[in-house]
Length: 316
Image (cartoon, rainbow, N blue to C red):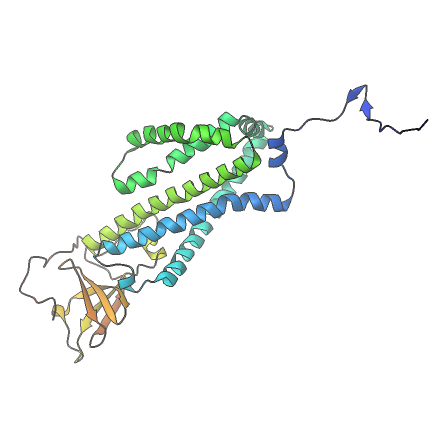
């Protein structure tokens, strides 16, 4: 007779001590620094990619307002990549303190409520329909920026649109995706990408409004609490004005100061604020005199003072 050892299952008070952990919860609670970095990357990277892609459209919209392309202003892909990368870094520097403040506030509230806030968050995570509903409503709200660019919307009209988009298009797919770990990762990817795209469209809206101010008044309205319009500064739109002179150092266009939009292939692009037209002139034989960065304009100044004056030749 063969003695076969049977593994003994350790019990306490006659009950099994093993606890069944849901697969979703076990996957979401890996206590390692690598897992934490993966979570952060799964949210930050989609936001950054979506934001970068949409900001590219914003730069095109700015220069299209003046009747030229970014390439005609000397902004090629490499220059644009550098400018938008710098924009993303500045946005990240502004977002990190805000994120840290929210984390600290969450920690304080959790301590004050004796862990009640953590239990509430755990409740949302353990109920797939609740988590899917929050993600769906957030995804629907990211379309606010798109509708703000396409047409003027108010909160009274946008809130029903966001709720309708979230419930009708995202709720059931997000609920089904939460059944498996790969689905939950995909849901975070979609929500992060939509967040970046929505934020990008909001920034485009503000940049186009600022560029329209430059077109109408020669200067963008400053942002609250700032000396200038930082959004245009972030994407490299320089508020640089110059008086044009010919090869003999004689002023052109009646000595008017013009906004220098850029230079490409030996051709300058200028915006004549007083006539509200965009000019392109060969760099050879064109001298830039009296270059001023962000000049102080008279109060109430507006472009188009000589828009109807046809006596001057704009090609001289």
